[in-house]
Length: 227
Image (cartoon, rainbow, N blue to C red):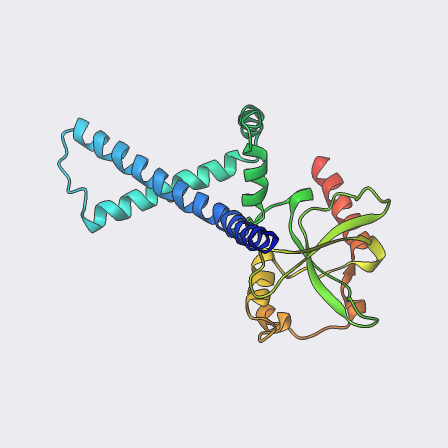
């Protein structure tokens, strides 16, 4: 009986892991296709109202709909950084699971800025020597003073990993690396080095910027912007 429960538990655990790994991807695909359908229908109606007959399945029509979709997403991307977006988020935040789903989807967003910008960093390795490549999904200080959260993802499927609270002096920022670069690195299982993915030459650890220095420079830039 215990063996049966163990097997069922293992089966259910992996199902949920697969579900939550696919959920952000499926949600984004669904939203894109839903928006495409809505824009297609709305544009078709507008053309009908002005008396223009068009073939809704023609290549030019599909291309026009895609262009309108891209422009719409661009406008939304601009609005995201305004107070209007904050008001909408405040309303949606009251919906159950919205915050959790938003955080999961945001993991895949490599264009985030400010305290939510994803940093690729190097930290001391598991052994006595060497380093590990990890991610910082935010630059918010940990519950431990001067410590920050670094995530080390699994390879080749980065749907799990480990979280560490590391002192800022032990974290080195790889400034020209992005979330997408790190994902390529994980999927390659080390067949491709991060230097190869970044198309750059290997550097000494002293040439990387310590997190404390990176945060100081960022703070100075933010102060200049506010003036």
